[in-house]
Image (tube, rainbow over all chains, first blue to last red; front, top):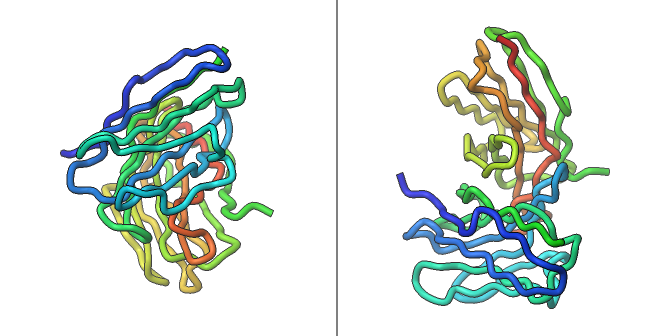
Length: 114
Length: 112
């Protein structure tokens, strides 16, 4: 069964460093998403991406964040200068259509900023 | 107030018992999604409901969406230890935008 994969599973970084989180969405999907979940809190939307551009972003997704689809398979989230409060699980999701279609989530990357 | 309210926050049931988890939206929905999460892991898609009054089942899990499309319930029949985890409802809609908004989750523990 096709699935969304994410690497790395755990990343530890120092405050101020740049990190890139990688995702491989399901191959025929066209809509891509990043969410995050701070420990003990809700899953929160960060950004959606379609047709090589951001379609929607939350207020969390500030200038420190960027997304890219560098090739036909990968979808990346970059945090330029990490802060302690960026520590969270980051989930990538994909769907084959937009609104009102199920999104399939990856296993997540646990980001720890020290 | 919360956009998506889930209740209860946590639940401990004896193996074999039935249980219900509720999700109430403050806004009209296009779709209501149920996911299961094990602690520290990803979200596993369970079911999506779109039509008012719709009901779907998967193995021993049944979910319903009310006619007004603002409330859903997830019902597990004859619970097993494998049902333990965190159940999350998610929603999208005109007022939510092209993204999923999630409830806080319901932690389910099943005692053998």
